[in-house]
Image 1 (cartoon, rainbow, N blue to C red):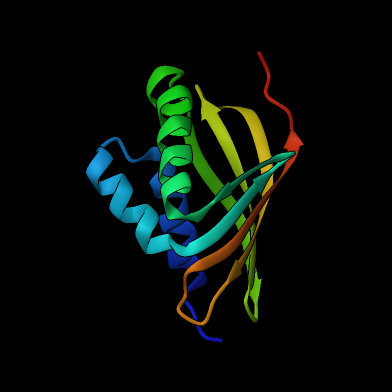
Image 2 (cartoon, rainbow, N blue to C red):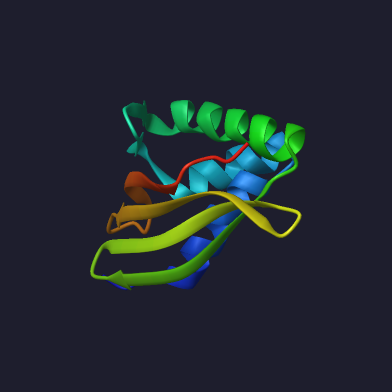
Length: 123
């Protein structure tokens, strides 16, 4: 499998920070497969429609309302797997971090998206 890992990670991070709802919906559809699954702790989202709602809700509460920016670092990939760390940052302080693990399909769309919290939210 040949895909552009850096581009995928860049677009993944950008979707969470995207303020325009229309562009955000388009970005979700261009990242996740129609039947994709995202798992964060005990919560799951299935399919692009649920993922659109999930990303919009996270953007509203964490980025628009709380003023965080989502950033990523240390991406690695081989075969159909990509992993990297995401952080919620405000005022140069990391408030939350997770290790993201993605499985990418032959069409370069995310099939499975797992978040493993490595630094719980600070108050």
